[in-house]
Length: 325
Ligand SMILES: [Zn+2]
Figure 1 (cartoon, rainbow, N blue to C red):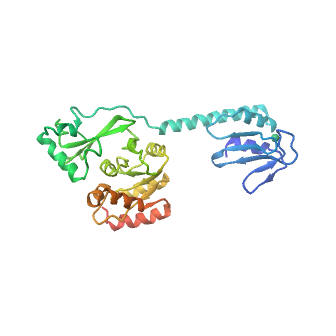
Figure 2: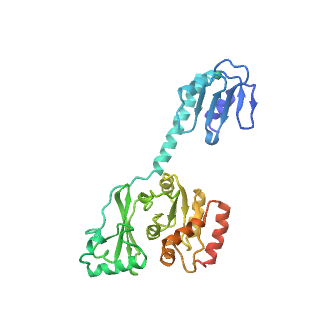
Figure 3: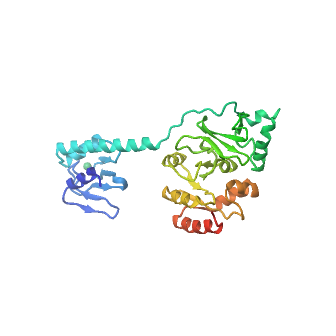
């Protein structure tokens, strides 16, 4: 319990009654009430409220706020000495500072970034397509990704010409990219990525009342979802996704990193969808190639689960059945 809640409790009048809903009733000090119409309640997260059901006077405090004038008045009415009130003011400021620092750490900032030299939209190369672009186009066709689906970029520059460049946007600005190799050349991805980034957030404006989170960008583009850009969920990613005010649904890859990602999703209170994919399908893009976009979305939606026990049971089976390595 916070020092503030504890002090208020100890200074409430000794003659009290407790209601089943958690209110403490006593003679309200604000208006000379004698029928115990003053109510005090301590809510989740250390918040406290006072409500006089006689004259209507209200005062409240919660961590992150300073002591309001009304709360100050209540403290004086409860005969809390001035030096203690001052101490409580300082305590409120200290808590306020801490919570701001925590929030500042979690809210990520993204600066504008350049794409690799000579990058341009693939569509702009197609009037007179260079030879080296063809494997990239073939890769996209093979993955059932269309130029209308996303602003795919390419550059003839050495080191990049065998890659499809996927720009990262935030509020319409390019803030990074990943360049995925379309043959077996390693590394698979060359990325310029800022910490805490969630891929494809800008495009989550549709009417779905949930947001789908995949691991990789190709999966996300396949169904207009978001991507973690890996199998780990960061605090700031959770924060960004929460800002959408929708149910968050993780669709993990069916591989050895999936179980840990599901565990993290549960810690953040997300839903998880582990669809009964046909054999051989390990991720969303595989599913789109085999089943098409609509069927894939249908399977994801029908397998969506928010109950953590059910998610844990399903995960045990789901990752085992596929003999994930
Ligand atoms: Zn009153």
